[in-house]
Image 1 (tube, rainbow over the protein chains, first blue to last red):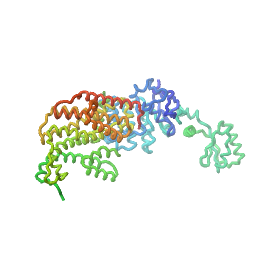
Image 2 (cartoon, each protein chain N blue to C red):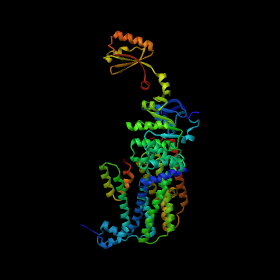
Image 3 (cartoon, rainbow over the protein chains, first blue to last red):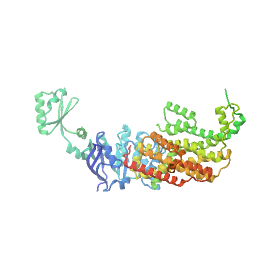
Image 4 (cartoon, rainbow over the protein chains, first blue to last red):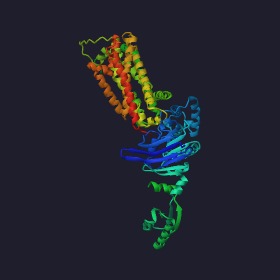
Amino acid sequence: MNILQVSHLQKNYGDHEVIKNIDFQIDYGECVALLGPNGAGKTTIIKMLLDITKPTGGQILFEGECHDQKRQFIGYLPQHPTFYSWMTGKELLVFMGGLSNIDKESLEQRINEILDLVGLSNAENKQIGTYSGGMKQRLGIAQALIHQPKLLIMDEPVSALDPIGRRDMLELLKFIKQKSTILFSTHILHDAEELCDKILILNQGKLLVNGYINQVINQNQQPVFIIQAPRVNEWAPQLVNEDIVESIVQTGSIAKVHVKNIEQGRTWLLDNIYRLKLPIQKFELVQESLEEIFLRMVK
Amino acid sequence: MHYGYEIGIEKLGNWLPLLLPILILQLILISVALWDLLKRELSNEYKWLWIAIIVFVSIFGPILYFTVGRRRR
Amino acid sequence: MDHLFVLLKKEWLEARRSYKLLWFPVVFMFLGIIQPLSSYYLPQILQIAGGLPEGIEITLPKFTAEDVLASTLTNQFDQLGLIIIVIGMMGIVVSEKNNGMLAFILTRNTRLGEYLLSKWIGQAAIVAGSVAIGFLMAIFYTSYLFKAVSLARVAAGLGVYYIWCLFILTFALMLGALLSRSSAVAVLSIFVLILLKATTPLGAGFQILNPAYLTNHAVNIMISGNALPHLLTTVTITLFLNVLFMFLSKYYLKRKELPSM
């Protein structure tokens, strides 16, 4: 059985379809990234998983059961964790732990462990209002893990942090993922690639890609010819041919030409280079990176 | 210039023990409000504004601070 | 009910950290002192304030100790006191609803009912303590300046009055669940509650249903030691309205999509 099973999930706000019939599942021990540009519907999906927002249609099952019985198996880090600023970090964990039915004896020990894990032991008695953004995020992780949830759900855990805070957070998440099942959303591909085995790419409420990262690359990768020659602007538009060329992207003195078929494309491009007498400096066949696949898909 | 009625010193002496608790309560409110205001990280302008309100707007100054003034970060 | 205890501990901590535990009782102590003091020194105050011309004698009504205590309720607690209670309660649900904390707490194992109940019990305790200590000041001053009063009567009257306080609190809490701005909660609560109060001198049958009329009952118990007719009916109706308000709040919040962080 999988830990999370989402089927035919839909959400409408009035006539506006925000989430369009989405299916995916998460198995035990997996780390899954929900990837998409801003406004793709990532937060809406997460809010439905947590029962903050009611779905318009579809089903969400945790270990085969609906949400109500399973709340304490989920840990949740919101996008902007603004907890009570008048509480100390430790008091917040006592409060959250209490709400998740941890008994008093084990709670004290658990809090010390978790504060140590996220590196907040020194600040445990300071009020949250005095914490930096990175510290608040780490406290958010601590409260999400306090009850040892089976599934950790995080909404943009690293997006708002500065480079150092972000590095710390990624290292922390790498450590956590050894023991937990994780689903997190991000709009930054690099974070997904660094942490996860599986990605879900979401755009405008539709799930475009669902699978392991290397699978996704193999299945979606298109061959690209790189042509480098002076005055790209002048010759690149002449390489458009609907039958053979998928698209052309110009960057600097380089044109990246996606073709539908490698052999056909190569012959056609070389013919044209010869015909236009392009003073080429480079002609190369490369494979798309995951980033290029992602950008192409969400364009 | 005073007009109308004047309170003698001996009368004030009679009133004082009764008025004292009010003064003490007021003082407690003012000092706690000021103590809280000063230890927070706020702009000086904002602080001076609230110091004036706390000290000069009778008993309502501190209350205003506790209900409205503390919300701003 | 473990959650309720956890939530109540949080309410208590918040009341301490926000100084509510300090300023709320202090304001009511203030109000409790003002009425006996100003009643006793009314002649002098009038002379200072008005500067009465020579030769004009005014006869002031003689207050009994019970009168003074009763007017502490009607002139102080039910005016400034009422506004203070509403101001103190206006943010209790609104702020956590707006900043996403309520939605977040509900993603834990918490039920909406437990949450609302913890708010209600916590605030009811603060109001109870504040009203009691404030009135204790009034009793001290009255006993000293006028004469000792029957504590049993005063306690009974205060008990009836407290039910009206609970109504004020529950009404403000419900508006906090329904509306999304604490200023709107305060203005609307004060408007409706003062309106209810303003109808009490009209008498008539409607007062049986009017929670604000509980102050009149309380005053009567303090002054005469006897209850007015229909006391129990009004008490029952008020308690029923409180329960109804709590259910309405819960029902509304349950159906609404709460803001999240």
